[in-house]
Length: 135
Length: 296
Image 1 (cartoon, rainbow over the protein chains, first blue to last red):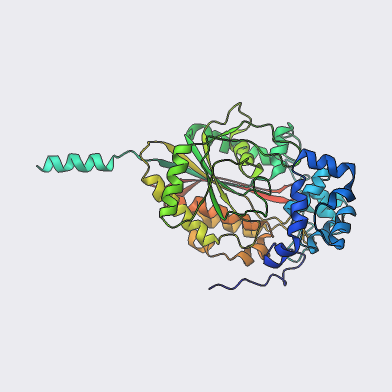
Image 2: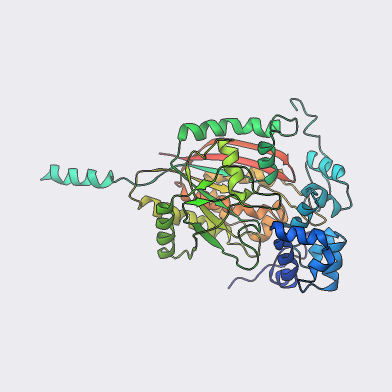
C-alpha cells in the first residue's frame, strides 16, 4: 500500500486532500451552487441569508462575506470552487491570485509576464515577454 | 495451398480498425478560450501564443480526424465534490457547453461518437480500468478550449468527440503511471474496433501553474521543457513522476499533466514529434502544445 505524501513542506500551497476536503465540503458546495443563475440571484439579494442554507462554520461564513480569498483556502476551500465567488464578483483569476499574496492585479500580471514565481514562491523577475523583440 | 494461406493472412492483417493518426498535448486555460471568443487573439498579449497555434491548426485540418478522444478534467462544472469519478467516458450523442458562472461559452455543441465511446467503456472495464459511464453531462473549458486551440471558430466542430474525464482536483488523482497504462488500454481497444476511422487523442491541461495560495503564479519552464523533450523518447521516466513532485515543481495545478500521459500511452512506443509550441504566460499558466505521430 502506498502512503499519502505530506505536502506541508511545500510553501504557500493548499492541496485538496482528505482532511482538507472533509473540512471544506459544505463551503465548496455553497460555492458550487453559484453555477446556477437562480442561486446567484438569491445570493446577490441577501448574501448572509443565502449562506444560512449551508452549515458553514462562523469562520467560513465570515471569509465568504469578507472575500478573504486566502482564508477560504485555509478553511477547506479549493480554488476551482472559491473562484465561483470571484466569478460572481467579476474578479479575474489574476486579481484573486494577487490578493492571496498581497499584490494588486497589475502587480500580479507583471510577475506572470516576467516568468512567474519559482518553487519557493519568489517572483523570478526575468525579462518582460511583451517587451522582448517581436513582442 | 500456400497462396490460400497468404490470402487469409493478408485479409486478417488488413482488417479495418480505428487508426490513431496523432496525439496532441495542450493546455486548456480558460483565458485562451476567452481570447478566442472575444476576438483578442491579435492583441500584443495573445499574439505570440496564437501565432504558435497556426501550424497546429493546419496539421489538424490536413489530418482531418473522424474522432477526437479528449482526455480532460471537469472543473466543478458537471461534477462537484458530491461525486468524483477518477476516470470517465462520455457516451452520449452530444454534450452541451457548461455554464461556468458567466453563462455557457458560445461554441458549437460537442457531438459524441456513442458507438466508439461505448466500445471504449466496455473494453476498458473488461481490461480492468473501472470507468464511470456518463450518458449526460455538460463539458467545460477543459474540453472545449483544446478544440478551440486546434480548430479555431468553426460553425460546427470538424470531428466527433469522446470525452475522457480524469479527476485531478481531489487528491489523489490517478498516478501518471496509471494514466499511461490507461492510454495503452485505450490503444488496445482502438486496435480491436471494427470501423476504419481516423482518431486523434488529446491529453490536456498544464503545463506548470499554480492558481492559489501565497505561491500563486508559480511557473517552471525547465520542468515543462524537460517534459516536452521526454514525451517522445522517454515517456517511462515521465510516467514515474510522483504527485508530490508535480505539485512541488510544476505547481498545484501542474498535476494536470498526468492527463498527457494517457495520450502518450495510446501512441506507439516510437513516435515522431511533429510540432511544439511553448509560451509563458497565458493568464496564470505556462501554455504548451505538442503534436506526436506514430513512427513506422
